[in-house]
Length: 153
Image 1 (cartoon, rainbow, N blue to C red):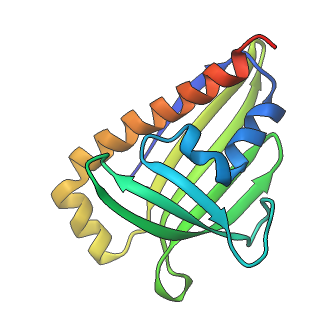
Image 2 (image 1 turned 30 degrees about the vertical axis):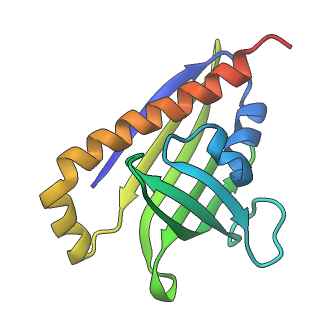
């Protein structure tokens, strides 16, 4: 009910983190999430801030929105948010961790589903296909970010 991918980027952590933490620009990088907006008057990321993400699930037309809450916001190091359900119940946590390396930054994107019974059943029935899609989409997201941060200026 979890997985992660890592991509090495020839760039410092700060500009990578800036792209990842600007949820309003998510559609530029994610194959499934095509937009997001800050909620509650927020204009920037911070722990506890909520935003609404717009998703085109599997790219075949099932469109919906989710409310997410930022749970980690450490510039240049980590950005994480949880998709929340009724009563602020966590459903799925998405995390980006940035680790300095000799040649730039290793960026790890991960997801972890909450271990509720309905999600365990879902993962048992469809986890193999959804896990594969998530891995492919996380890699595509990170490669799109890599392309931007490694472009000559």
